[in-house]
Image (cartoon, helix red, strand yellow):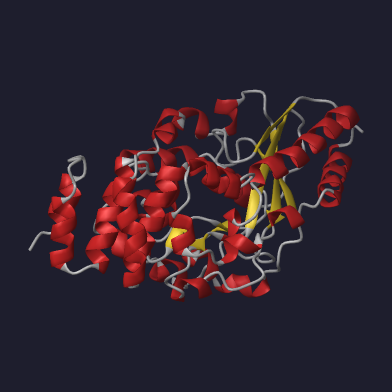
Length: 372
């Protein structure tokens, strides 16, 4: 193939045949505003301890900074819409809320395999060079997807599609071919601010701006240390990610359940018991979350999150689980256990437990827990 329009049509047909639900093309230089927005985000410190964002900011600011030869970017979307209400579980305080995207297999591996197949086919049929990316390289997928006509970045900063609401995984194919671009999608948020108002931790200082340091997805997945105490009570039973701002978007009325079987929610991750999750050792954690994106947090951070949910449960029977973890090898886990117990036990029982703690590594947590 040599006709750019024919190549574009063939790419879209190939992508649809492989299970992608949305496809579009944009020029590599189509989002010049991205660099300044990212620079401002980092200057404010809103990226928290995601140091890799700051370290890759220059390459991340534009596709050509990452690969000077790129001329066109093929953006593809895979629908992962849930088959239930993601917010319903928030009322079940003894259960764990895991983000919709993480209840099935890891989308990175699934999508990258499909992208590589398209890339190999494209080189064989039309020539040029290609590179593929799925959320792990220095690529700003959401602005590129909006520029390629897959949707628009909503006030919650995530991509919104008229057809699939807030539920699209994104993948990118950079190519040296010069292909006809699609028109960018017009912002259709209007005066709606449902996503901003629902955020339990007020992570949006303004529409279209996110402070990751207050975002539950960041806190439960990316943040490595103890979660700030003032935010812990606001997290409820969300132990991995948060779907609130996505789930309330009115455009979800057109959303459909995802078709990809490997991304479907595993039954044991739809509403797992906090008590059972709190008992996981490292080997059990790895086994339960095999092929799952949850595994990347590691067992200790995951149990930290579970213990915060235990503390927010209001269920005193879960105190025995937290008490057992006072002897955990990880100080991160022990500190979270102290906080959970401070929410579930009377002061006199807490004081007795503290007297039995000879370790000393979580004394600050004990002081806060027993503060007048």
